[in-house]
Amino acid sequence: MAESSDFFIVQQKKKRYDIELKDIFNSYQEGIKCVHINSGNTPEQHINSLRKAIDSYCKIRYGVSIPLEMQFGYIIITEKNDPNVYWFYLSFTLLFYFPQTIKSFLNYHCKSYSGGKEKFTTIVDATVIDTVKYNSVFDNENRLNIIAEWIKEQKREYKSSQVILKWNNKYIEVLRDISNKLYYLKFTKKREDFLEALKNGKIITWKKGSESLVYLIYRLFNDSSNYITVISQRQGKDAFIKGIESRFKLYNQHKDLIFRNNLKHVLFNVLSRSVRKHTVMCNEIDLLIGEVKSI
Image (cartoon, rainbow, N blue to C red):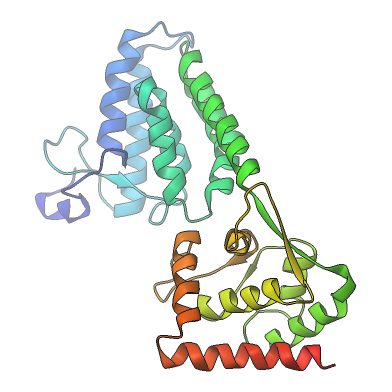
């Protein structure tokens, strides 16, 4: 059992939809006693099994055993700090979760997931729902149906909001030249990255600031040669911003993913050229495009 000095690992605050081990254990301990178990084991056997799993995790993760009966603090599981058990305990949270708030819980974690909403939905569909089903040693059809319904809603929403940046095949050599130059200027990791992103839909990482990518796509999208078109059910002069999000991974100085609303803000700042670095960067991109067009 952990000494009081070990409780620095226990957090003092918790948000409503956090994945918290004491909550999971208490919910399971109470819930399993109120359902008809079809596994052949007793409620106590299932409770002890979960207790051992949590205890084993705490010993591996923190080096100590944390009493789940403690009256203070929270043992919170996050995707960033606990990637190996995040999906397992997210699934276990759902086992006895209040049905009316399951979608809100999933929405919360979907929004904050570093891999993006589509990947989160895919994992819930491929792994989470099966984990919930496997560990539901009772009739849990209502919760499973709600999870399945949430998955369908997310896929439908993603499909309707998807924006695709499509390169004009008439200018494929221009794209290849741009891709080469971007690689030599250290904007991309590989020579073919930019070409692969716009020609074949590959998701790539942009190594430099988001300002340079946003301005580059803005210039190509608005060029009289119509290098880039946007395929989308949603129209608008800045529709290409959403397309950038679907093809490129952008990170800020803290190595956090940058998303669409931030990119719209970035475009506004770049076009206003309110600071010198934007002018220098825009000139660099303008020169790159000019050199390619003159070939």
